[in-house]
Length: 457
Image (cartoon, rainbow, N blue to C red; front, side):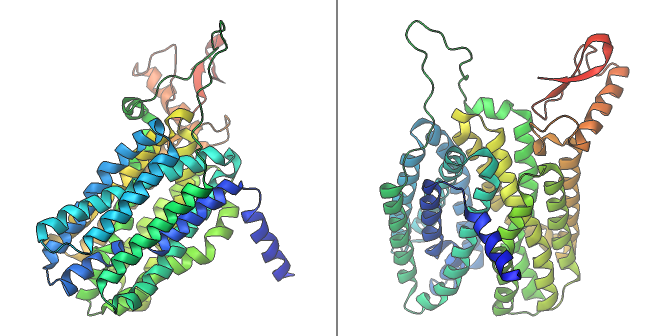
């Protein structure tokens, strides 16, 4: 009976999604199967080229800087040009820049091209996420984002294992293989994935549209308080997860563990995501995101905090497992929430701003983590990581609407806390007496007839 249940669960996890999504999913998997360069760039620079660790860190920072810039630019292009053109331009330019990076010799040229690789490769993320939001029904988006995230990690796990074998034939083979797989990804998108950008409804001749959607610019995104709260909380969690790729291997090396030991520990992340992401998503979808993201932040902070007590491969792997569970909960829930908060014709800009939170984290987290470790030691960094996780969880629970926008009245306890807080603020004159505004979710409490707080639009 357990086999029957597993089959039924698998069928329910993948059924009901449009064919266009599965072609987009396939292109994502192909792209990640060839994602060799980003994983082994530091090793290529230090081992094959003989550059210092400082130079490798600088190149990595420039790679992240390029990604941060392209997150916003690509979000705008996704809305203006369309999802498909932006995605194709990103993939084709990534293939070219990755191939060029394998041939350049001058250190300045390497740094410049690495920045371009970060810029072109990250430009696809807003387009892919906006396209998923376009073609998948709202009730299925969390599941769709989870499946896409699962493909990313499956591709990463396979490419990381294959890259070591391919590198034996020279790192240039890695660069060319990466470029070739990216081109294949572009071919799939060109042949099978149609444009999904919603067209603005035009009023019939002589008829004025009832409520035309206002234009969405970057200023609109920045003024959207509830969404920018999502971005800020996402940045906090992302800074924790990014420590796994710089601070964690450094700490393990300081404990006398080898790069192989680090590979075993960090492989726990990919294996666990591939193993449980899909069944866990069946539990996550259709649930209020507020408590889910709160628990996610707590687990992520606790996992990195637990690293302070690790001294063996087993303990490090256990810590990785804890924060990986937080990552598994966070990713589809957060991306589904971003799609939910984004206006139809501004999804590219909103997804670009959300992507920026991760790009900035990939740029800032290694620098901040290294500075803390050099000045105060690794234990101080892991203790600070636990505090950041608590802050992110408290911010999520306290303000609630980054995780509860549009929920039904009374569904979330956070909404009740917010209303009670604003009632107290009214008593001391800090909130106008006529309206108790709640910018964090779709339905706001307001002062109705008789002075009672009533729910309305």
